[in-house]
Length: 68
Image (cartoon, rainbow, N blue to C red; front, side, top):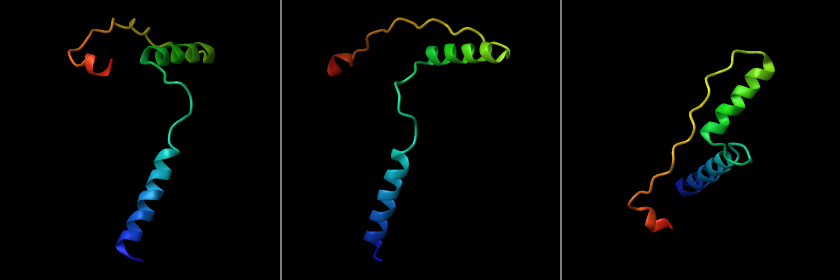
């Protein structure tokens, strides 16, 4: 096998392995994940973690106009 063929096979294998990582669902915000952990702890009868802080209001950044 040549170096180029070996590199291509390794690149394809890496792409397939990384493409299969994760879960397919909506993204969870950190606050929602913390609320889910609290509910799971309550259901399991375990100590409940602290309540998450409410989200802060999103502030505009000078470069936001580039993506709007």
